[in-house]
Length: 370
Image (cartoon, rainbow, N blue to C red; front, side, top):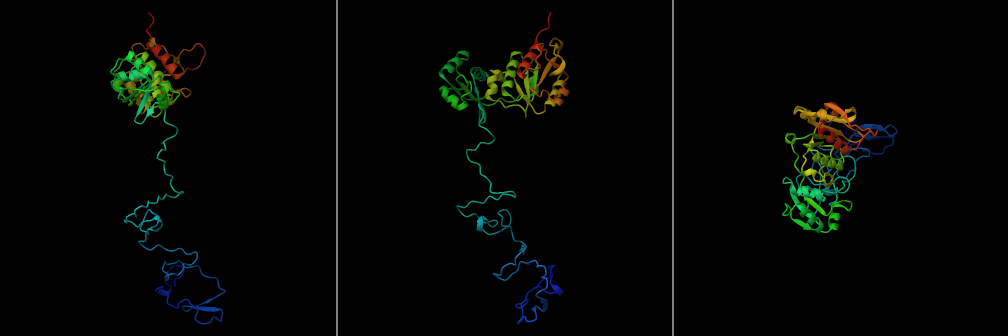
């Protein structure tokens, strides 16, 4: 018998003898004998001693007493220790029985783990039109023709209707870098969606490699920098204006700009193949690099002085445009050399970002009046 502290009283061994703690003979005087200790029945019972974990075989554990773990005894939760194989828990180092499955044990917080279905898609929503596993679908006659002309574009499949093949052949004589596969319009619509204007031509290709800033600056013309412009159609239209006005390239932010898609290529109408599209990790640092390369950075925002193209003569200019609504971010605005606005005598306050880019490009590239 142990006292409350768990130590044997009076230096004893703590082992119970065969008759220790049992009443010896009739208990006539309201007391009972327990290993030489007298105890009254009506006395308040002592606190239950902590079980040492050693009991006679088959004896039940006293109520409210927690068994102690013996040294070296493992947990039986499927993660640590040894434990038995009952209940789906194997001993450490033993082989799983054939035909059985290892139980999935979750950490604190709840029920069994939900398994992903084989057909479950990562992310939300259906795949975007023009997107493909490891590539993209380019559609539309102008976009497909420009991709077929681009020696840097890696092509995989070309699906064309008879009419689209004839139209492409009139613009670009065969042979092409991709073998045409004759299909019906419905096959392309089932692949890309019924709302996609594909004009009977769809080309599966790899995305173009991202150029370096140095390679972009080796081309003549102004540079366009887009601060968090997220609409792929706007970026495609800006690429088209950049090609029309001889821009050296377009710079977007890597994290807040859309990937290269069929919708972007369709809006660019072939300009995606001719105008470099650079993705910058840090837009402010890119502006600093442009200024170090002797490029004058002009941010377009309301409240700036009127943009005057002839005053930019003799300078290489980078036009910086922000997203519709938010405009230029504070750090981007502060990094620009100057802030300018477009003249709008009609009283309208703003333009679509792609329209503003076209007007600004025209202004800085128009020749000075004689």
